[in-house]
Image 1 (cartoon, rainbow, N blue to C red):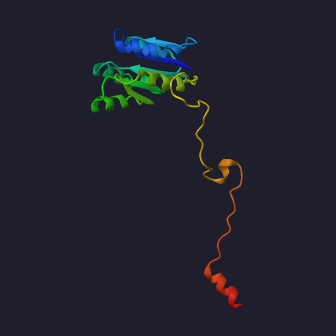
Image 2 (image 1 turned 180 degrees about the vertical axis):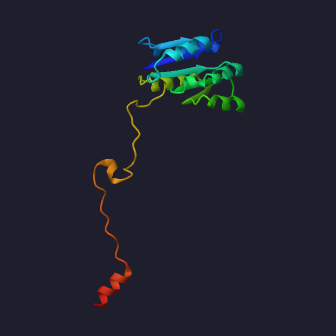
Image 3 (image 1 turned 120 degrees about the vertical axis):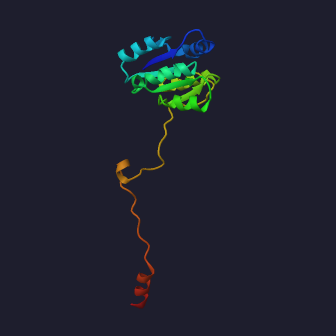
Length: 168
């Protein structure tokens, strides 16, 4: 799994993010991009089937520029960090169709944990969650789902059958 990270250089948030995701680069599969032109080149040359995107937008103009590139993100599961919690900003952020959305003033450790899980890596955070746990349905929707036959229910006799039996 490859991780593609976009965060403009020069901000404290970019350094915080780099600190949080440092452990994800164990196999050299993390590509950092610090400008939009480089990000475009990476998106055009990267196989999207095995890529996760982590996008940090510092301000609304940068978010607008990222929205213009949204076709390049089409097949990539995204984690997006927005500059503020303004309703218009959040609405624009959802225009990128992220799997997870957070904010610059949030805990970037949580963002790193989400990305870690998306990449299938073992959790190293304070969260105590079994990474092998699977969500299962309580039962099959129909008998063909489980490969076994559905239980046979015997119908309750209606009152007319009982009357006929007692009369005869």
